Image (cartoon, rainbow, N blue to C red):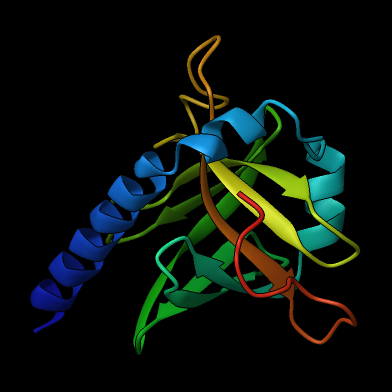
Length: 154
């Protein structure tokens, strides 16, 4: 049962990646954003929980624990793993699922962040030289005033 759920989660992530790839303006927009630095990513997300949404409309919750651990929940399925900040990216690596990766983070307001995929592993961050990050999701820190508006800016 767990293996089927993981396979389903991986299939949904692959489907979302195809949808994101089809959104041509998202890649073009990635060139115009201001990326958060390593220090800013840690300061804004460490010890916090983020409620987010993918381009497909699927919602998720991810907690970036003070210890470096991470908990991800989507559609009643919970994954654990670790998070780190590497070369200007937020990396979310799951213990039993290959769908994590490293993402550039762009602030889109006082409490709204957009995430752009750049590599599948911490070792590959920040991605290939000259590569363009792909818009993946947006989210806001739980319990803080102001959050992302419905729908992506991309």
